[in-house]
Image (cartoon, rainbow, N blue to C red; front, side, top):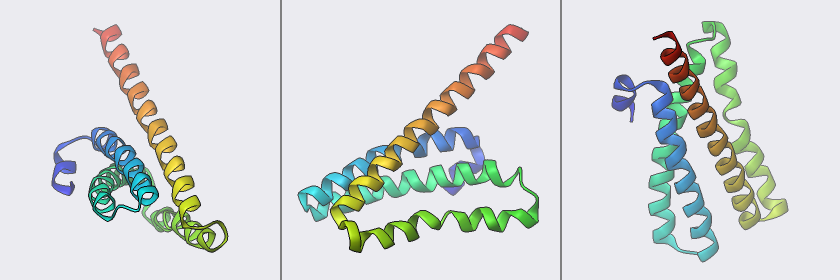
Amino acid sequence: MRVLSFRVKSEKVMAIGASALILGVAAIAAAVALESAWLYFAASVIGGIGFGAGFQGGLRSVLELLPPLQRWGTLMAFGVPTLVTGLLIPTLGLQNVVNGYAALVIVLSRVALALLLRSRTKRIRRAAAAA
């Protein structure tokens, strides 16, 4: 996806990533529930593509707005959900954590898609009004 990101706007990369992430995470949750290794690996590929594209597109759009000395803190914050998830597994169990994390990722990905579409629609309307 890195090659793609140089030719495509950050917003489009994020939209592709969010869509693949929704599909991949839902399939991962299903694979865990069904205890299906082949579905888990296939879903991980789809989810990985989605995460990679969404992460790269989002990261590019955020980091370009930050001064260089503030970028490290933003990058470090991306590890917090993984740490929290790992700490919750012994208490809540793998199935519950996977389902909760999957639901959260899907909801946030849908919100990101909706915001991207709204932003695009506003730009199109402004361009049409200016013409």
